[in-house]
Image (cartoon, rainbow, N blue to C red):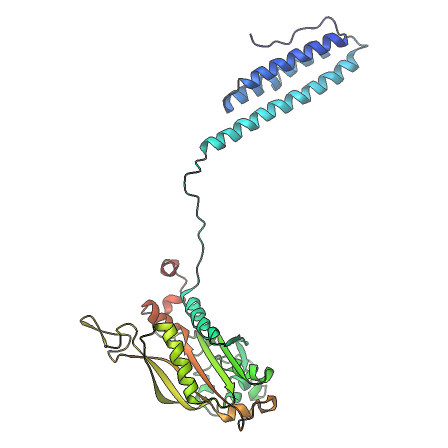
Length: 369
């Protein structure tokens, strides 16, 4: 039989205690019968409903009818009772909510995997190149992207009228005309200024790798971009020869492209090295045959060789700019090399348009995870 709040005629403490004990026993029984949220809500409406709930009945049948001399004590007991009933009813509601969540949770289902990004293919390629030379004992060096004419050209043995200094090739910052030529600011066209800056700070022997972003005044197309990436290396010590350069780069290329690749050095010219060379590797896509199955190999233009980088022995004129820090060209020598990361990434991933790397199309970049 459902619990009903009885009317009291006797308001003595013993009768009040018995009535409260009976009320809580009824509440405990009804709580035990709750099976789901619908039952819990019905329990809440029955006990704490504003108009006809059990607590409203207690207030009406016990407190209002209590004699004046006992009303204060009855009011205190009723307030305690209300607080306890409300707490127990709320606890029942929370239990049923938690039980519903647990029932809906299937721990055997796979979790929701948060999308995790990946290295950009150019950054990944650059890191792979840097890692190879790090294992050879080269440390990484950094320098500013906004450079002065002195570090970008003058200290690297570019004569004053060299074509690279022209605005058709180099991006100069505006409002530089009032400055001395060597102090004018530009976006660095190579990472070679890092080599000069490092030699100013550190005495020989030296083995560093400078990797980063560079800029040139090129119109963007499938193979060119006004912004691209380079990795350059510099080794300086006593008695360094061109043979050391060839051995270092041959080992590095085998690490990067496979132990089967061969290297070839062909004479070239760079203002900051003498003698200078361009290094080719046997095509790692066609195995040096110039053909891929019955089709011609486009990356090597059917020659079996791919140009990878420029290199050479550091020109003594470059050492003259840092001679005060121990780089006397009469006693030390060194070699330098530099490669375009973007071009290597194009070859490695079989991409035929450089601009795809910089357009931010997630559909394109997702395939390199």
